[in-house]
Length: 516
Image (tube, rainbow, N blue to C red; front, side, top):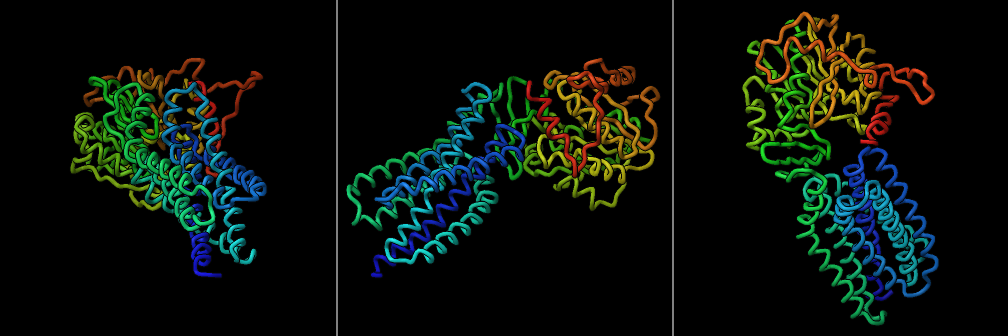
């Protein structure tokens, strides 16, 4: 081969690696979009991978029909991947904001299938072109496939540790689209002598590249306006942390915190939620010296605990430092939590709650579990028998546990399954629920090693809602929210504990909330 052919063959291998990086990034990006917008991360990633691989198979099969103009075909495949993939996140947010409910999933799956199909055409074309310029078929196939697989690893690592945390999903998509188009333009330049109307192809690619660059710099702001339509109030703060999308909205005096689209609290009624979460457990416990809060990075639960003067130490375990930082810096949140996380009695630890309990050696008088709902695998493990067994093993004999347990009205079977799971560890339980206007009817599980008596306690700290007299009434449930749940045949449903091996809660949760 002459020098020109050598340069061309070398770049073909580089191109195969680069487009593979782009392909795997788009694949996991679509999975992240599905998880964030549609929920149930495991389900969405499974479907996205399935659609993407199916698309690649379709594309690889279609590549057999491309018999001529391999380079021009490859160039326009890259233009298409860059354009469709680059605008994918931007378009998804817009489609979710304006389309009828439920169609956003079909839109995402269609984009995944199309980009997967285009990606499936890339490698066969590059292998055949490498063979065409003088590289043996076996050698060209092996090298291109090596570049492809190695590129896949690099793409996954880039998305997980750089693109998603630092650029977000909109800018990441535009950047990767730019890379696809740039690869196409370089290939076009290297093979320009054998291509007719090369100037027109350069102009087309340049135009697409300019669109993608404009999208990189200005698309996120427009996507922000789309996302604003998903929330009823103006967005005050939005960031993508390492773990989740954090959004704070404000309308007049109503401050709301959302994590991955799920409402965590509204300042107009959060006191009804947090007082019911914290004070029944505090009144049941014999001592309040050492309190453990799992979750609660907004600091409001800690504020309620600090009302008890005899509290010596609060250990708060929240995975995401960004939530705690926001709670300590945002003036609206500081006003709500009264600077509780800055109190000298509070120690904040950023660690997975499950791992913390596995390694912890301390015992606690009161344990408050204020974690997001179990809507994916990572959160489900924090609602399992194994997790509650760890909690029991760190609870002092005269201590008390309180767990937020979703809604007994909207997610009735989920609520009572959580109760059954806690009881399966040998703890005595009591079920509580309260109306929180921003949430609806919300449930909690109170648990202890000893029998619970709500009538024998006094709430002596200042509260806005909860009183000694009203506390026993919170354990009364109506016919449409009690434990006697019937199936479609009128038979009583037998509730089973949620475990790591048999994570039944995720499916129950998704089914319960699909009509709300």
